[in-house]
Length: 262
Ligand SMILES: [Mg+2]
Image (cartoon, rainbow, N blue to C red; front, side, top):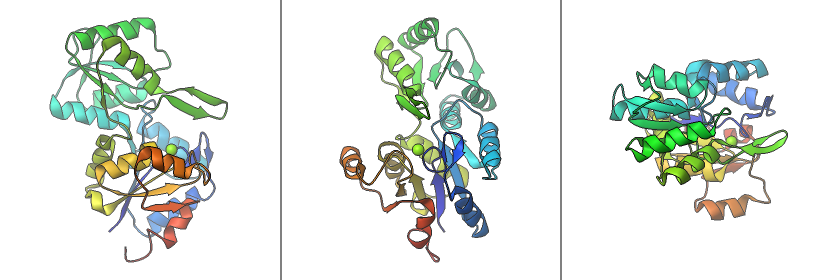
């Protein structure tokens, strides 16, 4: 059996537009009963909000089919310390995931500082995060991406805020999102499968493919996002790994890594 861990931006969608053929790819996965999860570093939105967005584009999706770095971070912490006190720098998706995992959101004396994208980030939040980490709180970031591509160009990503907290506190965070294997391990667990059974599909060598390889999964690179035929070799060199499959579009995977019997 093969199961799929599928990236969203640059693989299924471009911002709020579906990538051509993505709906058909998911329909075929359902027809052939291939288990899959969408796996995203985005911690700002809840799984339900992301599923609604995909459904609105024609990719009918349920919240349980979305796996976010916020959920993986929440589980990571709740396993280490059930009911831990958390100072959260983040938006609704992260806050909700932490509360759902039984963690307590606090402003004072946290056990953990957990950071995701926060478009209301302030100097006061930076100061608080720095202070708590320097007093011994563990530091966790959901998403190390420092830049976020939008249709209006690049904007600062969650990783830029994490980098500010890291610089201020002089402390390296635990990274949950891709390229860390922690998010992939969480997704594999949710599907109840082993790494060898999974193919990680994504557009980014440095995040999706690196995370898949770190977790021991097979990997498939699609050319619908950040990687193009002209920059692919350079990205492969930088990542120091090679994807198992390369295809220009998602649906090409059917003839290759998803052929019957595999
Ligand atoms: Mg992507």
